[in-house]
Length: 141
Image 1: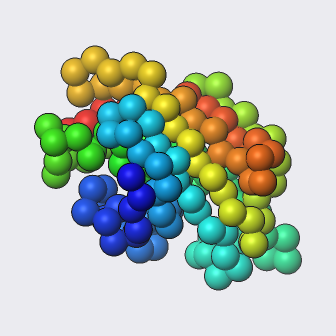
Image 2: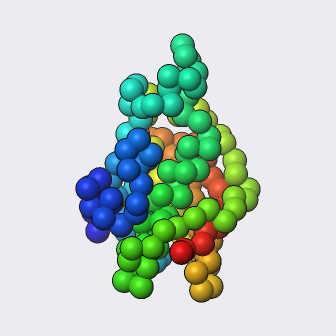
């Protein structure tokens, strides 16, 4: 299942400037997702992070993973129109800097769901090189 940004906005409530994924290239609702974020020079955070040395903030990469995972969960019929909220982040590891021109591949596997609460394992890579990995917990309301 492939989705463009307009289709993504039909699933999650995020909007510009905080919709941080560009497309979904694979998705199995409720189970897994692969999304893409094209890192551009004019992305809003580069004005201050850092002038003369633009690097994607690690917390925004975690948010990108969370938005991708939210698409997988909120695309289920029973979750339509709901919102996914962060419950926690465990084992976050930042392994490489992500800079303008990079294409960030965001992969999230939903590993546990109990009622409205769940856990996803996420990995973001650039050209196959791991940039960030984390376990993300969420609540759907």
